[in-house]
Amino acid sequence: MNYILETIKQQMDERKWGTNRLGEESGISPGTISKVLNGKQPLSLRVIRGVSKAFGWPIEMLIVDPGQPAPDLKRLIAAVGKLSKKDRVILLHVALEMLKLHEREEQAEADAAESAKPPRRRRART
Image (cartoon, rainbow, N blue to C red; front, side, top):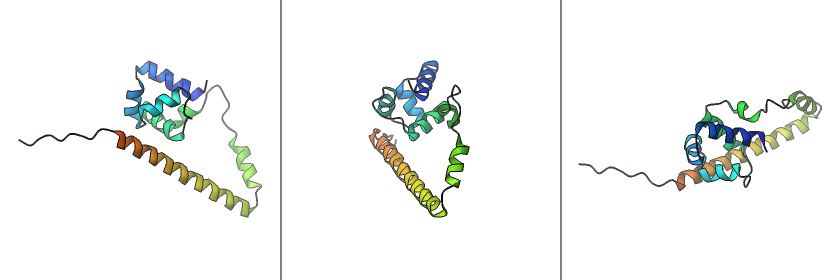
């Protein structure tokens, strides 16, 4: 099983939290959390961010498996450094567009979760 999912489930057990509580604390809908934990929906960065916030952890604590070596960013940086200036600019534009798309998807999910909440009742004035 995925290290991140194992960690989430373990923390939920230790805290005696269900998907509803994790949803409240993370800002992620309980349905989305359930689907992710059951492998019916891929784990997204938005879910990882929300869960790490709910647990009060920096995101690195959730995504870095202490049993595995960290990704070799030096190799990636070296590979990008070998690209021509034109190709680096193209790569940067593609990365920025991917980031914008991801942010729009996260916002759409957050908006959908917010609109699914029941409206707040107002107290009658006396």
